[in-house]
Image (cartoon, rainbow, N blue to C red; front, side, top):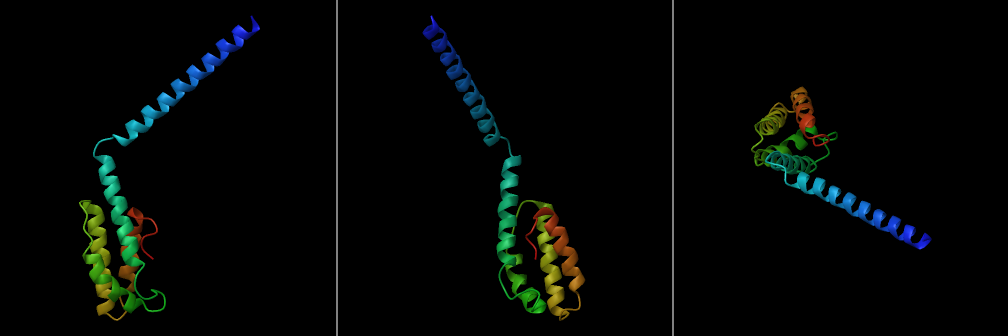
Length: 127
């Protein structure tokens, strides 16, 4: 009789494990199949990665802020997203870099402000 009980307990554990695995699978599938919000999140993520890649190129921003600004103007202008807020912040940073370059470094506060606003959407993207 003892063997019969342990076999019954083993079947209950296997069944419980199978039910748990099915529940986890259902949750994961539901997360992958969520509507358009996941698409815009992915696009925002990709755009933020693109911004980071652009801003990581060029001279050292601390050593040569004007040269760094000049290096960012064209590449930032080429970035596009359907996220209007993010696009506006990218455009504002591009404009701030252009003004910094044209003013030979006198308008650094514009870059600081535009970088902070972009960083709010893309943490760590702007130096």
